[in-house]
Length: 119
Image (cartoon, rainbow, N blue to C red):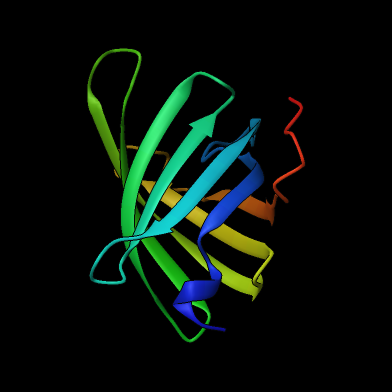
């Protein structure tokens, strides 16, 4: 797989970094910048935007992300995806202030142009 295979829109299903493994759904849009670095934008539950930048090697995609919480504080973390294929990403993530006893998990499925995400 090559980095050029990654750009597109993905449906995501995941669980949070907590004992309850709270589930969520959303979308992830991946693009490349002029230096062939990954630019990522998540929309979680139609209400929370997260942004990130990352890099790709040996079918592993690593993205540092951040977002503004409901308390207006900035939260930061990192997500690591194993690229199963150009259409399926399997990942785990952790936030700086998340529960260190757990990792969040996320699975991403590429959406075709004609598909719509239903939450």
